[in-house]
Image 1 (tube, helix red, strand yellow):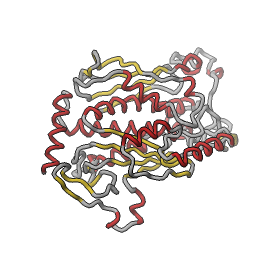
Image 2 (cartoon, helix red, strand yellow):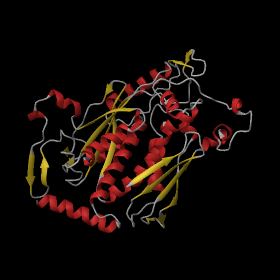
Image 3 (cartoon, helix red, strand yellow):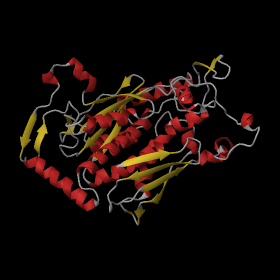
Image 4 (cartoon, helix red, strand yellow):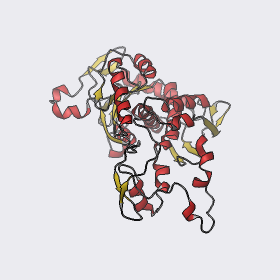
Length: 390
């Protein structure tokens, strides 16, 4: 599968076109709108979430609630567009109007794409950069992931995401929680954290950052259960599924690190405390006593739950801005301030869940016959039986 996204933060709409979904898969707009709503929730979000109530329009590739096998076009309208038509309009400016464009940006914000993008594409108004590099683009990435989550759910793969750290405040892991229990706790939490003991401390940290004109980051975790063993490949570097997931996580705005299972902790442990012993029984076939490697060996799924974490840096748009340099005058100035969140880690967990879903769904599409959904699902079922009896 593949998809492209298009659109600017304050443009008329965000668009994505998905290709490669099998024909005959049930899909309705509400499957996508549920994920879009989850993305907009979470403690620490800014005023943009009050303006935009994201819903999707399915413009092609679906008929009467079933995919056709042809490209699927999804659109999410920007409600704020009506206030930006002159600033972001596509029509050429009349002669002499160039200097009248409002909200022109010549002061790059540290930590953003502003200056590098302006240098790359030759933009003297860095709004041309920040409108596309904005995390608003993740709206349609979540929409694409929602379609992938629907496919995964129909073949027995479930996902959950949660926040494990915000601003240095860490949640305690509870390995006794089932996927469903973890999901229920997370969905009820304002910070999408399953540990009620640290929930308030996380919210206090977000409030303090906002009060000080600052921002804070954190760590999110995505767990996917039900993936059949042997998906991915060891034969080439670019066919390893864990490497594709790592790239997908780091491609999310503001994400700077990724790990699987115990991750970087493996560097501080002996091999006997890192690798997962293999066991077998009649009912489950091959499993592992532990899951320290996060569901991967040799770039392939083991059949154990996939556990991947991403590190999100603090949002670089600060209401107490850092110093920068005006690209026109070359004089030092405080960086430009755009509307922003003090912490978007809870929402980023939803984004991570959906980009992981896309990569997992794509790996199944690549490996199994996927023209028709019924034959696709049947092949995955046979793969699970084959691996259990191997």
